[in-house]
Image 1: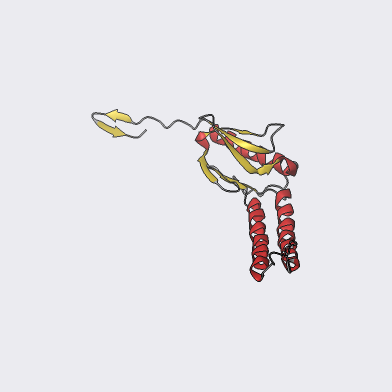
Image 2: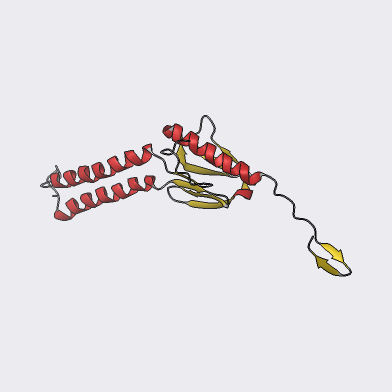
Length: 172
């Protein structure tokens, strides 16, 4: 795995999508500027002559641009973090904190736009941080998550049973 693609401390995986974040950080300011310019252009009559644009209309149009910019920036939120205890997924509006024992598999089907976690109750949790448009970043991230998942699925060594000696328990 490349260091630049997946931030990986020993036993920890952190991935954020690359392409969608770049697009959003370009699109959000462009949207604000476009609506600001549009608000400046709103003056005079509405065309039929019955109504005119007021200062409040201009401010509302600029406010819509700022609101639209914030909505676009919501798409920079997705990330996935995983370690030995479990996996934490943060999507655009919702987050999940799942221990590895509820995860059946880490899936990234060929026709999927993003990866998903298949749970033991047949539910799929989307992982928007691992998107197909990020190519190698997504592949590295899925491989790292699968490796962590496989490491947690290994049977743990059995603890020896304590011996019972005349009604008392002693450790071996």
